[in-house]
Length: 110
Image (cartoon, rainbow, N blue to C red; front, side):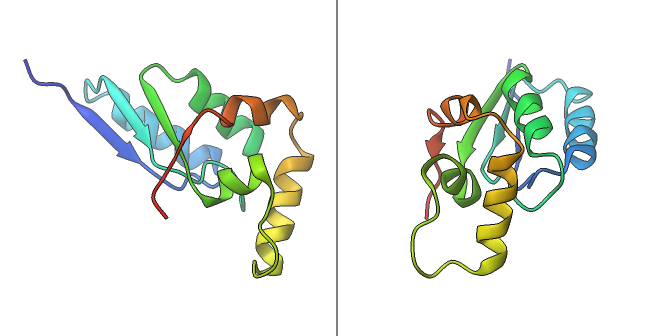
């Protein structure tokens, strides 16, 4: 029997879109889902997206640059103002313990 996997990426704190993608995936008999980074940042639901990814059976998350910025902080200088504001907003809407949940994710390339 072959193993079916799914790859999703760049949820960017957009819970309705992530939920739609996961619903479609669940109906396909997938045994593992790889989220290849940028779970948080930009969108309005960073805590909810992280919660969904952390509790989704078979989920294997990878850190994207927004996730790295959330856990370790923005490198200085050189990041645009919108990136700083997005990271501050995401970090401010979640308990600091959330960083400990994201920290073990493997960093993606680049």
